Length: 95
Image (cartoon, rainbow, N blue to C red; front, side, top):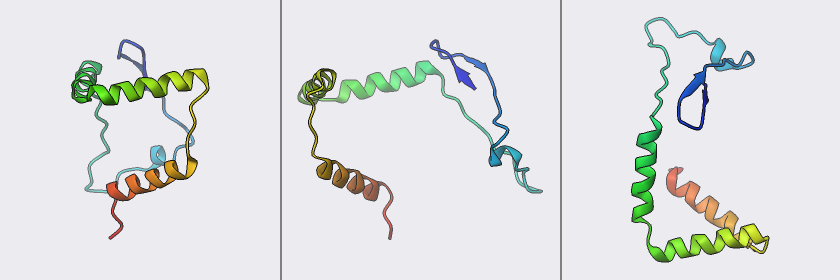
């Protein structure tokens, strides 16, 4: 399905090479379903989340955005990798 800038769907396109598209539901089981949230609801959630961000954090985000645009943003790849792994473990504990 394609979503245009106004949030409306313009069509549904199946991928012919997809394994999921070729599977048929087993007897007695329901079919898969897809839920699409409307863009107004998503926009409202984003506005609520932005309102909860502190001014200090927004300042830091703007500093990073400016550095990225100028090409002067430097990162410590080891620190970034460590944080990615820590976040992944926090979301999906392997116990």
